[in-house]
Length: 175
Image 1 (cartoon, rainbow, N blue to C red):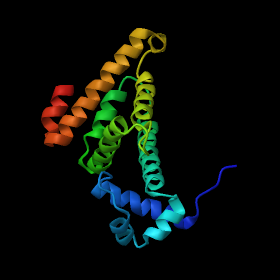
Image 2: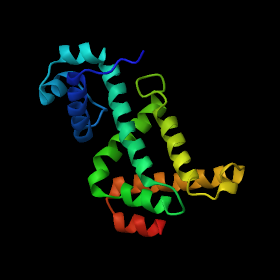
Image 3: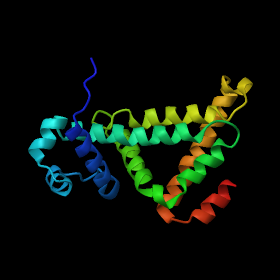
Image 4: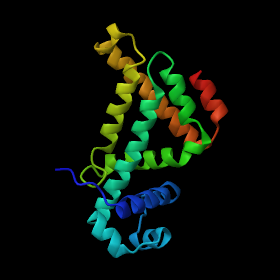
C-alpha cells in the first residue's frame, strides 16, 4: 500500500527543497531549515522520521526534477545538444550544484541517505543517451561505450562550467 504524503508534508518538502537549492545539503541543520520554511524541527522529524529521512526525501525530489528534465529532452540525434543547452542555462545552476553535491556524497557516504544516488543518476542519463543512438547500436557494447564517453564528457563539462561559470568556453569545447 502506497501512502500519499499529506498536503503539509508536500508543502514543507517543497519549501525545504527551495532552501536546499540555495543552501545545499552538506551542512543542513534542521533548526535553521525549520525557521526558514516556517515550521519546527519537531514537525519535520514527525513528517520525515529523521534528518536522514528528510535528506532522502530531498534527494528524491531533486531526482524527480532530473527525471522530468530527461523526459522533456526527447529522443534522436540532437539529445546531447539539448541536454547541454539545458545544463548550461544559468537558471539551472542551483539544481545542478545540488545534484553534484548529492552525487559526490553518495560516493563517499554510500550507506547514508545518499545511498545509490550517483548510480541511479548514471543509469538515468545512459538511458536517455541511448535514445540518441541508432536502434542497431543501442544494445551493443560499442553503443554502451559511446554513451559512457558522452556522459563522461557532459559530466566533465558540467563540473568545469559550475567551477568557472565560463559557459562560452565550455560550450565551444563541446561543439
